Length: 427
Image (cartoon, rainbow, N blue to C red; front, side, top):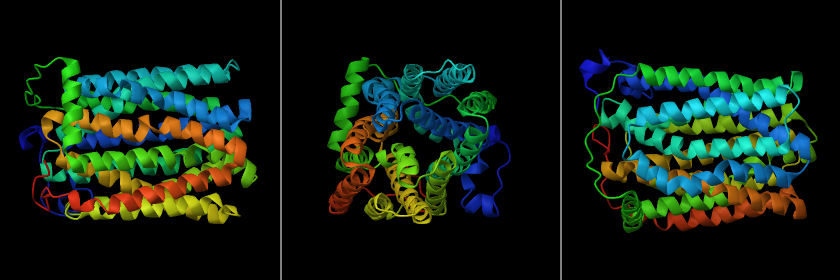
């Protein structure tokens, strides 16, 4: 972990020291936060542009589900191996490689689109390649957070600030993408995303990190995977969190994938309507993550998880039957608030409960539960939408998520391990 000498002077007074931005006291985290601010906006621009491009090329909701499946299935297939690797290698070097490869993917997709040579299969291939990159990048990012903060008590705040930044980008990126797509086309969105990766690569290179604590991983990779799975299964609290995330990812998150269908077929809009829907989701998500950033500790955090998950579920059901754009924007904002509150709280709880030696593997399981399971939900949602319509497909998913949140509410008493409050170390 960094020392104060390595990080430079750290202010001990004012909002930065005790408020919702306190993790920014750490120089390395400030660099990471700044680099991500540009990169994530580009990422969201690409996500919206890719969805609209696929729907423009195919006019098929099922095709949207197929691309989403290809973009995320690698997280499930490679997740166990990625987790074991993250616990063994230099995380900064791994992240530089993943960001460079993601940049290459975005620039290739841009070139194909701008030259008019793009096809559904090429978008599918680029999405699958990006999914393979993310299978290693996402758990590495989660595990790397603790290396960037100088004070362990700032870990929860850093996680919440990451979520805040992610959702601020969710607010800005889709709105910009809607304008760019309407004016120029999808290719420029891909180009801007590719260029945005320079910011995070430069930030990673500029960090001054002390050597990571030696973990002494002597077991073979497969044995390490088995140990990680056994560790997660034997800890009931970790197991319950991962189960809830699987349910929400499978049954609830596909509402985002089906937004192009909802924007065009239900609300009778175009790219700007899609951008506004995604932007409204970002507003709600940003509010939820900032609320978590303002918390002074993790005490009682587990009790808010089923409440937030229930709010998300109710909002998805309401969105499914929303008659007008104005109501839809409000409901997806509520859904964004509930979902990010759930995800950030679950992430913080897992990082609080896990031992350092298993951090990479548990965060890989977190990524698999959140991202690796989602492709199956997207395929199912696309299939259901083709047969019963987007409204009923989303409503069924929301109702199932409500059941999962009620189940988790009955399991909260299992969180018996003392959790850190303000001033205590969460790990």
